[in-house]
Image (cartoon, rainbow, N blue to C red; front, side):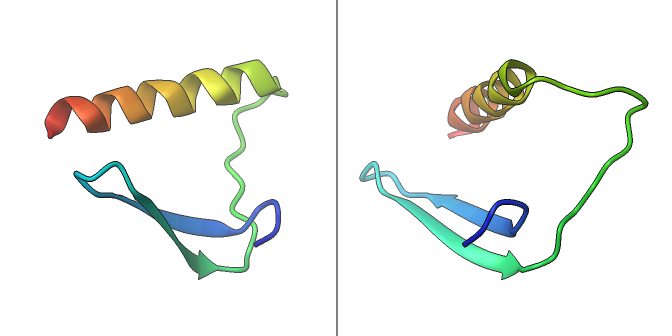
Length: 55
């Protein structure tokens, strides 16, 4: 895997995480400004918490 690849993450109840490569194409979303690494990390943490709350 390389930076920018699209992956699918599967969480299993045993605590395992399986990462599957979906596409080797960069996906870009233009938001009109640069975002920081901290903003990306915060968004990922938020999504993980939301996903964990659903299970």
